[in-house]
Image (cartoon, rainbow over all chains, first blue to last red; front, side, top):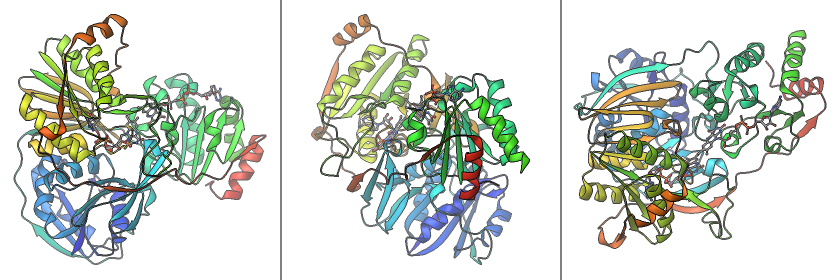
Length: 313
Length: 248
Ligand SMILES: Cc1cc2nc3c(=O)[nH]c(=O)nc-3n(C[C@H](O)[C@@H](O)[C@H](O)COP(=O)(O)OP(=O)(O)OC[C@H]3O[C@@H](n4cnc5c(N)ncnc54)[C@H](O)[C@@H]3O)c2cc1C
Ligand SMILES: Cc1cc2nc3c(=O)[nH]c(=O)nc-3n(C[C@H](O)[C@H](O)[C@H](O)COP(=O)(O)OP(=O)(O)OC[C@H]3O[C@@H](n4cnc5c(N)ncnc54)[C@H](O)[C@@H]3O)c2cc1C
């Protein structure tokens, strides 16, 4: 049998998180197939045949698949599952929406947000905002997994030569109508995949302060900008910039936290970063417990100095 | 319109969990337990719909041990009308919880089920989607706004990089994000009133629910990061980051 990875698409094609899911799926020790669904996505399916490590691409096209609605995709997954030993997707808002619905229809106890694959049935997943890791064994038979994309390296987008098979689409549920999507326009790297992330907390004071303080430094570093929930709730930063247990989980090469206290829910989303830097006026702030390098200092002094030092080089 | 809200009793979010001695669960003895924060948002959302005259009854349900009485009382004090406890000997996993909730939905016939988007203990974020699948109802996950009119729900949901708006035919299952609302502070009179509201306890054995489960091999703290260094100034920081080769 083989393993089926469920692809997630955006306007640029297949998301990098899906290529991370392919990396994870290949650790299950079987052939990896990729399911590409959408409306008018034959070009993307063809492009997907080049992804490294995939032996077959399944392409299902229908208007009903255009927006990734779980009600329309779950029946397709149920139909395909008989041929597979595992269904795998990235633990993104798409994967988390679709896979549990399919798992219930298939009566499978799924494993969410896998961070390590020990063998084909044994997995490690975080709980309690990353304070605890659980090692769990899934029952034999069909396994359904979402994997945390930041811990599995995305396979190459090219170099493969998969077969391409076109499927007949399943029926539309008719229960749900997709109305609109409002994506924040990014003029800088995406938070989840950026190599450098700088984050600010509520101490930045205002939306204007948040932007004018962090943006110039982010420009110098080519960094994505993150925020704590407190900063988001205070209207200083957009919702989708929230980093943490209930926001985006990041694992950049460099994470710099400015005026962030280091609550467990925030730290749970940054722990896998390679190097963490914290700048906080309070020497006892919990963020210093996870930071590799700390400065007990005022962020409003440190940021301009840092910017100047980096520009000078 | 009747709304059913599922609630889970979890370790309070301010408590740092530790693995128990046997390494098969977290330490729960003498640990403060609370209503799952997202479920509090779900209860608040349902109660506001009742206060606005859109909903007529709010029923809360928990699946778990007898200890769940406290979180059910909390929900009643927030304004839910009545509570149901499906009493199980232990905490249940998402697919099992979804099957019990399915049985309650079949009994209560609500027009809408609200749940939290994830429980902050296991962080699975599965139960609502599973329930929707079992019922063959539409679903909207991670909702930050819900409007009900003409037998449909218009839901704004939080997705990676932004938001999306869906229109669902009722009945439906919606899981809610913290951004849906700010749960009310419970005042003493409300707490007293809640004591008079009914909690119906149904033994799990009354339901013929069976579901596959994950076996826990080990519960452990993740490997600690190596201890960090407090530096004296920006120049030292830049030098350290250069040495780590993480600057562009
Ligand atoms: C801020 C925050 C942080 C969290 N962090 C973590 C975390 O760090 N680790 C973590 O493991 N989990 C976290 N959760 C949730 C959870 O951890 C799960 O592990 C679990 O096993 C699977 O069950 P669940 O409760 O997660 O189900 P989920 O599918 O996550 O539950 C979703 C919803 O289903 C309903 N539900 C689930 N079980 C029951 C039940 N027995 N009775 C009634 N209703 C139920 C509740 O409405 C719940 O909100 C977090 C939640 C929040 C709000
Ligand atoms: C269910 C649940 C889920 C949650 N999920 C998340 C999540 O996903 N992500 C998240 O971030 N939070 C989350 N939270 C919130 C979290 O618990 C904290 O409240 C939040 O992270 C605190 O944000 P903060 O660090 O900006 O604010 P504070 O905790 O108020 O800290 C401000 C810090 O700034 C420092 N400071 C002040 N002025 C300066 C200055 N001039 N220079 C330098 N330092 C300064 C202070 O010393 C302090 O340490 C969640 C909470 C709950 C209950």
